[in-house]
Picture: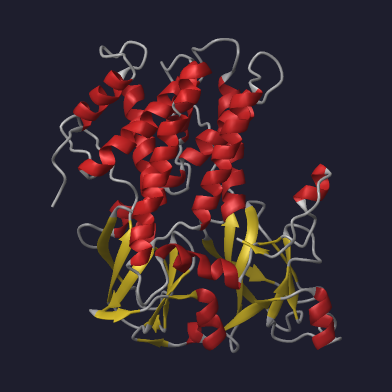
Length: 464
């Protein structure tokens, strides 16, 4: 069943009426659509409102699957989760917010206050920073490894963070061995000869080697390969002819816009607007926090048999050599918003079914219905109005803060209702956090931000 109470065209007109611009002169139709889209995406991100079921077919011998590319069935996982937002989409939103010409997103027709390269650079930098801050997207790769002398594996210069590593030796040692994350002090305490006595690696460190190297321990005794799960920078943006995908989940894309706005309004000179720049930076940080809680997989089935999804760390800890076993899968391990693993590695074609929190349902045509309940439409319009008023600054924009707060509160309440329904399981937000708790990406006991700012640190603990 679908909601059929309000069309996309009607919602845009309702937003225009709220802004006292009934004839859509100051806020044109396209712009109103952009604000409604962001409101819907943010609602979906906070509330986990849109949920659906789709499946995939396993490939014999393949353990890892990117759920954003799976096209089996209807609906399929790709249609529910694939990334569609481009750099031109973000540039267009920036142009509206900054009162610049929107004639094109690859040629500048705006004022001298900004240049197109200013917007493109801000979008690129914030997209990469967002990937670094959240680790939301993980890439799998296999790299050749040479024998000694020092067992340090070079990494591609797009690598931000290593989330997991496994050793795959050459014949006759061609089997997977999970590499445990350690540091040089721990490795030396366990085996003082790890760096001079070659053997099959069983651990790795990123603490001692340079940023783009991985220390294998013990140093390899034979040639082989290392399988890496990494967080990487995204593709180069700003191509002159065609738009480029951001490479992050659609519902998280507003984070890039707000971060870019913070940078643009924080520039020296005429563009400088410290009040709105601080507001934009705060909004960016809010999306970072939401991304760390972003749920994807709620429930799974294999060949019609329900399974409780686990994390990859749980799988590695219970069965370190699981990648060497091929059989009917018994476990589905979640890794990130885009990646899952099956254990044992499928030996044939099997069907897997996923209940997922999909990306927001965005209307494409005027006659498409807005897919939210009547009780949610008002708060969607509230937030869209707040977004629309950003470009006029002043009292009107600040006065709309109440609408924005109302939107966030009601979105969170819906999420809390879902969490209350999780009687025998982790809430979907907690489930998405498990792997980050088991393999933390940050530790606040390092250099504190407070110390750098000259303020006391609030204490430490593992970060996401």
